[in-house]
Structure formats: structure tokens, C-alpha cells
Length: 247
Image (cartoon, rainbow, N blue to C red; front, side, top):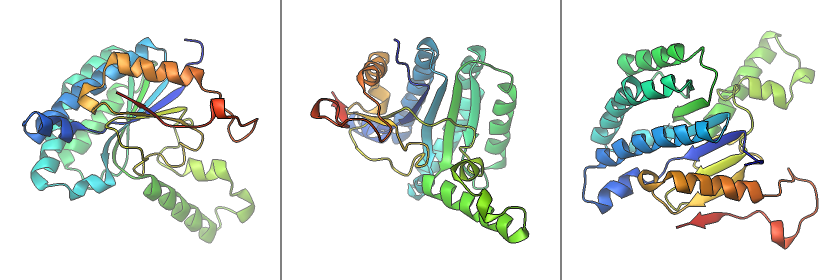
């Protein structure tokens, strides 16, 4: 595949609907979704993708029922201590972005340990967004710059896109080339707003637990056909920017 995206981001949507359609407990949908994540991470390794970033828990998800939130926290800890170990063996470098002050001490320790264990891995860079919001990331970066201006650490002339990016939680991430959202919805949901500026958007009708290796490579094949202009070049109907909804 000659035109491989360097950075793929995924909004993993549809776990709850998948469980509801099968009259299963909501957490079983999230559990199945975790298995799908592990599979897609391995697919990314096989496709020689360098960066994969997934939206696992948004800042807005705290409004869900308490039993679901607490169950998700337990699931995340279990994923870190079990499934993630297979990714470490595949030379995957794991990072976690987002707030940590609202998580339990046990979860924070597990996240830090996982990042440390994978710190020398040189394969796929897998970044998991937990308690993350794109707007908050940008506004927090602006606040830091304002504080540095006030303290005299910065001058107004030094402020540019690169400086703002360097103050964001996503500072380590390259621009997203391909965004995949499952579950049939067509919106960004406050995910990686800065880094999605010129991303190609692929929307799949498949619920995340049903998203398969075939579906993933279909998205990569679609990306390969895209004519990326980054705001320049000739516009025509054949290559216009559009969303793809796959069944």
C-alpha cells in the first residue's frame, strides 16, 4: 500500500449500542470494544502505520451513569494489566493523554507503569485519550502561554502555531492523516481538534465491536485513493472532500 497514513486516529463509537442490540450489559460492549482495539492496533503494526491515536474516554463521558463509569475504570485497569501486555510484546509504544486528576490512584499508577514499560519500544506509537477534550487542550495551552507572557518568559513575537502546539497534551503527536469514526455518527466530538485540521474523514456505520480487520483495511484503501490538497490545488467534483459511510 504505497500511500499509507502516518497517523490514524479513531473515535471508537458504538459499544453501548452493540450491547443494547444484544440485550447485554453495557460493560460487555465496552469489553468487546477493548478486544477490537487490540486487534486494530495489531492491524496497524501489520500495515506499517507509525501512529495510532484512539478516543477511549472523553471529558464528557463523566456524565454517564456512575455504575458505567466505575465499570469502565475497572475495564481500563484490566486492559492495561492484561491485553496491553500483548501490545508491549509487539514492540508497541503506549502513551496516554488527558487529565489524570479525576482518576483513582490505582489507575494513575497503572497508566504510568504501562508508559514506563513501553518507553523503549520502537514500533507503533499507540496513544490512548482518556478524560480528554480538544477544546480544553487548546484553552489550557493558551492559558499556559498567557502565564508565560505575564511572567516575562515569553514575548508576543514568539507566539506561533508551533509554540501553541508545544503547550498542548498532543505535543508529541504528528498531524492526523486519517480519522476513522465508527457507529454511523458524523462528528468530531471534541477529539484532537488542533491535529485534525487537514485529516481525511472516514465514517463507518459499523459499531466499534463489529469493526473488523477488513473494515480497517477498507478505510486505508479509501485513504490511498484520496487526493490531499491541504487547502491548495484545484477543486473538482471527482475528488471533493466527502464523508464515506460504509455498511
